[in-house]
Image (tube, rainbow, N blue to C red; front, top):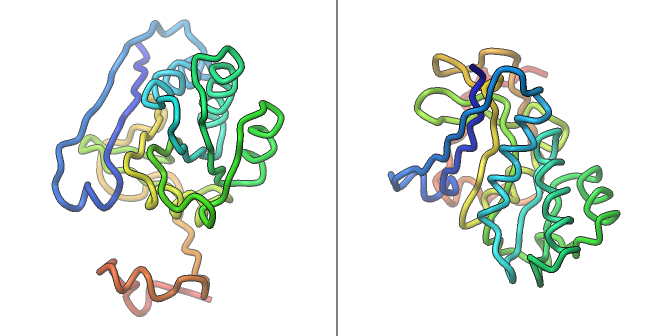
Length: 195
């Protein structure tokens, strides 16, 4: 039996302060396709969005289902006055086609909820993100969010901590270089970076 897991954790600031984690689980038969599982998990994640919220829109195949659903709910009138901050050009284009009002972190620095997928999730609900092309923008939007809803299906579940499937890219940019260290974020140890 394949499982569908929509995991919800609080933003990184809250997770570091040991706030309780919430999870939502549902189960589907093995006959359901991987895309259908992703769609079901994404739709469940969209339930966290309420009218009037500022929403961070993630990037990737699973997040695309969430963006589609938000567009449907806006069109039907079930959601109103949503402003979304996309994490990539691809998500920007998709949201624009669906008529979702968009902003940037410059104009909307506080986000109520961000929804995105993950690369890996371990049994402790520790999440590995960042293997895609939107690494920096995804992390910035998620850090600006009160709540981060991480959508995963069982193909993303791993059995132990650490990188299971691929190397993790590190992006170093001069933009906001002082912010991480002023917040007490860990520094990258010498020797970890290779040119």
